[in-house]
Length: 226
Image 1 (cartoon, rainbow, N blue to C red):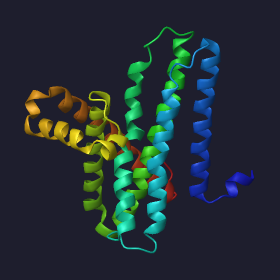
Image 2: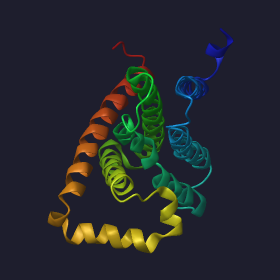
Image 3: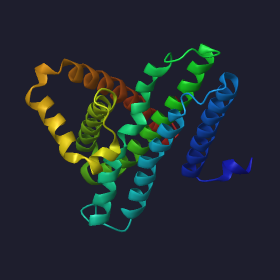
């Protein structure tokens, strides 16, 4: 097949595009079965998941010719951080799977899994790209610590999105209100047990999955048989 002659990075992007198409196909079939556009937000959320990957690809390209301290890499990094939580946020969309009575619950589980798995993969690949760039400059230990902090921030952002209904756009449109909610939970953590539980749960899950993803990626990169 000609596609396998493409560079590895392009093959990965092609595979992600294929999974995105499969997810959208599942949605369209479900829409036809149920005569309803319920769960249309899954397509939108998957679109949002592609945004940080776009930024990380551009960031890696820019870092070939500019220092990270330059204004453009810093801007791209900030935008990447703002939108990265969208990739893992979709895991929490499982909560909606029984919002309405549908034709086939098991089919909906497959559809949700397709969307969520694709979004999470996009997030891990984007995270891996930035991680690799950090390693070149800071070494493995420090860069890995920074990545874990980023995963923790993503986990807290999932709480902000799911429980407080904030989204990435609000960071730009309503930063003062977000800062108030965040500071209140930092100052009074014991008064917000839900924030602690949600953040830690997602941090353990996403962090653990990323470690597995990292090890598989490194084994593949070094052509090690797993």
